[in-house]
Image: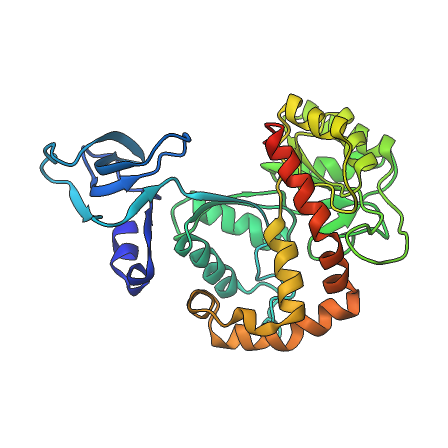
Length: 357
């Protein structure tokens, strides 16, 4: 499938090649020659390299002067860069009624064409793995099944299915997630989630710190901690949406595995940053999300780029321009996130400097 994909018109725009081979396991399936390799280790670039692929594994990285095994399909990569695929660690795949600038066709709850188009867009810009942090299970779990069966061209998909929140709080009752009852009735919801085999289960603790909204109910600390313990007992990793430091700290102490966002609403304490770094708890920065909200809200023409036109298409861009700014303005998000942006970036930079993930 990759061979066909690379031969299409999209490659004319690529400044690099992304390795996402998934062919049959025969000797020397693929040879990418004369590439400059960025291996992701932090070391220097490796110019004039030939990378050999057998099945879905890199078998060797060698100098371009070495011989290519007979029968290998060759991709000439002079002047291009070969690197590991990016991982987008926080998405909500379109296609299940969420706002994307377009409405789903009348009478259609799941728009698989929209989902597939978005998945192809991820591949085109170099993203070969995605984690969906809350979505309609009927959409995302079917896409995950089809990706793993090799039925669709797609990044690797990891997913929660529904995110789990508190009634009246963020994501509860939306396409993203559901509100959970108090403990011990919470276990029935957890059992249903465990049955669908989430790769990582997303939990939400949100007093609406993500925007200038009235204080809202939030998943209680004790219920959250019991949920994390219960999920761990059943072999399920966890991620938390907690954008205030005290909530994120409570989740860390409960044993949460990852943070779905950094703390966004204020400068964080040095001790909090050091704790994240020492415990090697990954944080999805989601800086691009907040930047998009600010820029689209202020000037919709930021969407007028060749890359956006190719990946999104003229129809979706026009709809995003028309609907995005008034939506963000009605929620107060553009002004709010612009004010918070310096602190958010500072928190992420300090985490990086501390050696965090």
